[in-house]
Length: 340
Image 1 (tube, rainbow, N blue to C red):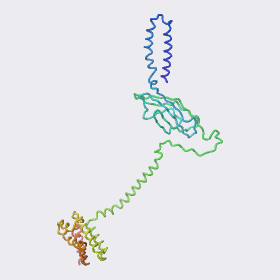
Image 2 (cartoon, helix red, strand yellow; image 1 turned 30 degrees about the vertical axis):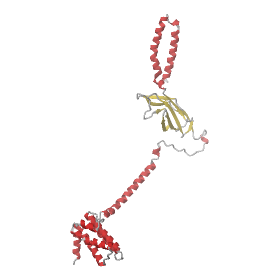
Image 3 (cartoon, one colour; image 1 turned 45 degrees about the vertical axis):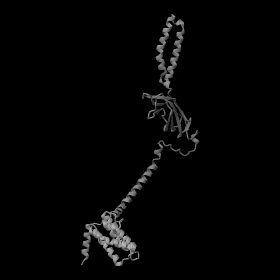
Image 4 (cartoon, rainbow, N blue to C red; image 1 turned 180 degrees about the vertical axis):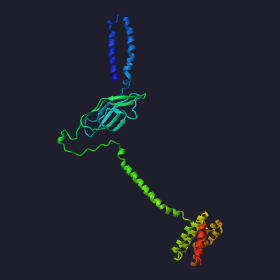
């Protein structure tokens, strides 16, 4: 704006001096006219550059307009700022807009060469802004200012032109001025809290069940083997005529026990392969039991009830003999206490 005034003054002054130079009566002789022309060029050339100025070269400007001329109290209006920055100019990271005192800013949308601002009309009576200004950074990083004319808005009452005759209506909803994610933060927080509570309950239940699970997994092999043999006795497969099923289960119990204490896959080996891997005298007592089970399973040999009982007792004796020392010592004490 100032550069335009400077340019206009420069043009007027130049025209006046040119007319004066063309008057022959002003110069005593024609010899003074040419030197005078060079003198005027030297004097007014810098002024010409100063008058043109960088603002006119880049045509920086700012204009402001509202999307409506009137609005009720509690309504919203949109203010549009059309701006053009000089070459190398840019908006700062923190936008600064002045002149909007009196209305609350709800939202800002920044587009190339345009800024849209949503305003809450929260006062009664006519409203007019101050001259609206927008700060920007020039090519050298210096803060500069663009200014636009004020805007005005006619604010009407919700009660109409005659408030004394108006009927009361429901209060208009308050327009939130916080962002969307803050408005909806309550339900995500409730969901996260519910998930955390569920995880805590699950871990509590799991912790209570853990001792039983651990006891099942850490049960000693000899204890587990004795328990399985006693359970086999209670099933009474042999007495029901299912001799093969009885000896299949009986053989599997002994093979799994041998595998757990000797660290070779006895459950997958044949009896002959197990015999080649046995190296201790107590383990050799197990071979007759496995061979007897093979005869029943594969040769249709049916032993007597007495032989079945002997095999079961021999298996328990082998397990007791190969169990840890503390177990054997406790078993011997109990055996001595039972004797008369």
